[in-house]
Image (cartoon, rainbow, N blue to C red):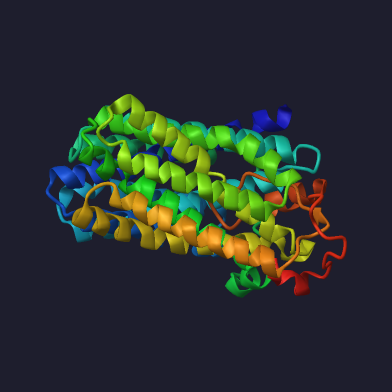
Length: 429
């Protein structure tokens, strides 16, 4: 308990940062609609965010090593504040895309510093509890950010100023805390080939997760506007998606620890296809039905990244886990960079349901490949512990490495006894 109290300042910074960064995507989408941006230009803003996010994940550990955690956090907060405040000074979609690169850079950089700080202070005894509180606060901030859309007027300097104030306020708790900053560890090597060698299915799952959540969270407001939701209702629509994903973590983890994770991924993707079909057809059924469908969509799709990560880590050694986590986040970012742009173009050409047709197609591919891997390969005799994996920074892999190995779970009863044990040979799984 004392440790969690000592982290109060860091957790407050997380909350403020999440409310600020989580609010800018839907606000940009609604502002773009009001300013007559094309749907493709609005999609470009979402893609630009993930470009900045990936740059921040790669650069942040190196900047921390050069100037220290506190100065690095201040620098990334500055990028975020400038990106937010500059919106209403230049009304141009392509200029806004550059600003969204800055806000994406801020998110990844600040989370890297905070997670490195937490990771350096926890022990094996309290690591899981600290991570659980951290994830809960992060999810709370994300829900609050979506609900703020109901009170933030689109294309208003005041609205962006409020988000910028929250971003700057996140600087105060961390810089004023008496907790000593961590010693900066070497940044994990980005090794995309490692993830492909260990689990091609895990890589595809991460990319499909990026395609799904990247398009929904960045272009969801355009869909909501297209089916007649008000800005306040769009906030609830996005919040229902996040809430559904939060509720799904326990049952998804329970299933992933007790059954073949490939089967769990296939089942989740089948549910995602069904939920996408509902979202495509329910547009004229009223706000309550749309909110319920959004929650079910989040329930089906949110756990896919964590299950994919858990499956990939089943075939990694202890020394590979940090780099594997970074590689999977890299593939998630690839899917998230491309999907908002494609989804917005499809909506512009074919209407709001087209986004969910794209998402469903991605999950059809994941099911087909999952069935092919099950026919070609075997699973491990033991499985690493399922961990809900936030998509925040490359650093989080260090914290989850020990949690994954704290206890192993028995393999599904259907797994063959002659399971391949050498990770180098297990890439067929």
